Image (cartoon, rainbow, N blue to C red):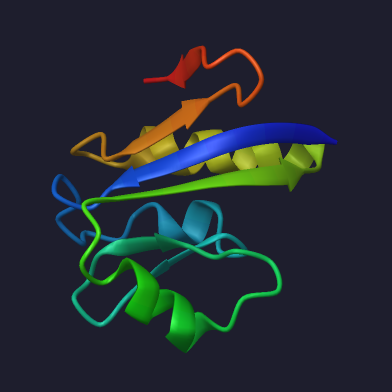
Amino acid sequence: MVKLKVVVDRTLCEGIGVCVPEAPKYLILDKRHKAVILEPGKDKEKLFQEVAEKKRQEVVLELSDDESEDMFRAAEACPVKAIFIYDPDTGEQLYP
């Protein structure tokens, strides 16, 4: 398992949605067409309410190797580079 801190900058996100098919287990567009990181165990509608007024959503996820690769592909697919990935232990920015 790999721990990654995933950040969506909701001010940069334009809701194009090309990230979602790359990591559908962890990314979805909300009603405003902004990317939202799905947090395991959280109700989707409550999560939408929580992040609605936030400029950034930050979540530490524990991912399998395949899921980690999916998340990096999702970040790479974003044409406005609104998805950032960090090592949660060191704070090192891994993408972009």
